[in-house]
Length: 271
Ligand code: SF4
Image (cartoon, rainbow, N blue to C red; front, top):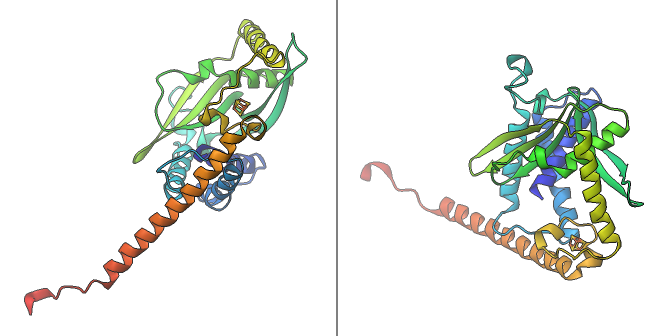
């Protein structure tokens, strides 16, 4: 959920840039505080998808602001070569932001539908991810999402020179910006991906595909209310508990502060 709110604020920033406005970090952080985070929380609660335990809204807010600053604060491009620095944050010049696409499978009457995060002037496809830990594997090499997005762009006659996952790793006290970059998929790789994914689509169509029923995965799913209403209800209960916990924490903090303010100060000098 934290990631969705960060993503929304970055989208605001990049869309403004696409319109040739001059958004800055302060504006993006304000967007995050006033719109992205509260609206994401609201929609998440409605879908019953709250899964955090001791992670308060306050911490989510602070981590979000730090992550946005880390993403935006890449040094100016002119001070580095392509190999040294990825064009992200304030160096990223978008050509396309959050555009949907459909790719037709060859073996079933289905379409793979997706949304392109960002396609930039370097003809690189970017996918922004936030995580709580670093991963040793180059995610751009194995991302199905990027494969689909590449096809979506190529179908529109656009060239893709690279695939990239820009990962914001939010750790205690710091945010690491890790860029996973890969060459575009070859035509053979695309064919094999289409075949594999088509098989999965066919299995779903034939109702041979078991429900995952994993709380974390299902919390992102738009069909949760139809497929797993018990999970949806569990999410609502979790949201209520979280609100109660936040209110208790805030009351505790307030009580501590007022006790501190009421404590008589010791006179200096012993007289
Ligand atoms: S809720 Fe969604 S992700 Fe979970 S099992 Fe059902 S369809 Fe699959």
